[in-house]
Length: 198
Image (tube, rainbow, N blue to C red; front, top):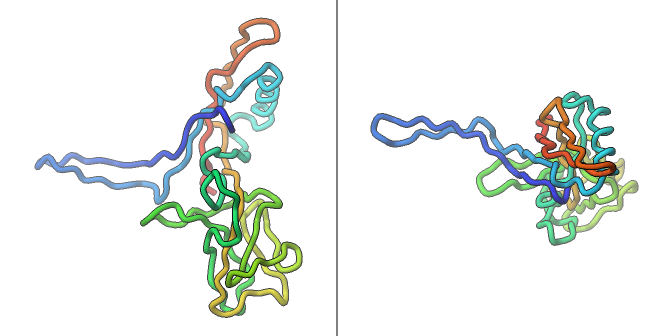
């Protein structure tokens, strides 16, 4: 993901009123991310890998994981995740499953984290870190944390989490243009990617 350009994209509709004022409305509850990974290609072997990967995904047909270098942790990018980073729920003594989420910003709904990175998820209940595979399990394809029998959070137990995560994305084109500058050298000017809403 290093070398890629892009970031969050909002979808705002603006209507100019006769008075000169504007009426603004958003079509999406949270921004979607869009990237161009073309500038991340550094050598010919990476170019070949991307071409093979693109064909295996059949262009826009199949999604895959992508790491946003600026937003891929439950904490700021320069810090290490902690089990206290994000509140993911409050126990009731019965519920065993909690969805990983991340605060998206003041006044915005929580971002659902669907693709946590394996072996990075830490969980705490009332500030006490829980042991993975003993107290809980994580589904890295859905972001669902499930507490095992005997470890279900008690009523009013604050459940928090720390993690790294990838974004579900797809190619945003069915065509991959490859420029071969010389024997064994070339580039891909544009590799557009868009975040999937699952």
